[in-house]
Image (spheres, rainbow, N blue to C red):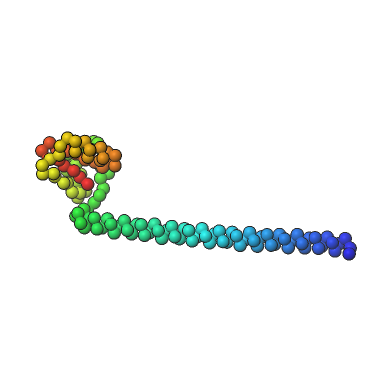
Length: 133
């Protein structure tokens, strides 16, 4: 065998191995892209399902409690007077729940601490306790 034939055979062998590696890499890349697209599709479907469940829950709550808006961006936790609370409730069509017999001091402290913890505005009136949700 001549030197040229050996060189041609070695070149062909290297080219064949390079083509095989490129095919393997392409197959793996396509497989990974397919898995990524499947994951993104499932994630999007799950997000849509959760959004739909939230919308349905919101609609049920609004229908059950006659709530037309839950926007309380104008009220900050811990800085609410009863007058401001009533005004905001009227503007946002939220409900105010008067408590017939009032609230004792321990209940006020507990409710205030929980409201502050969750960022819910709450105010108390000297005559009746007023809560807004």
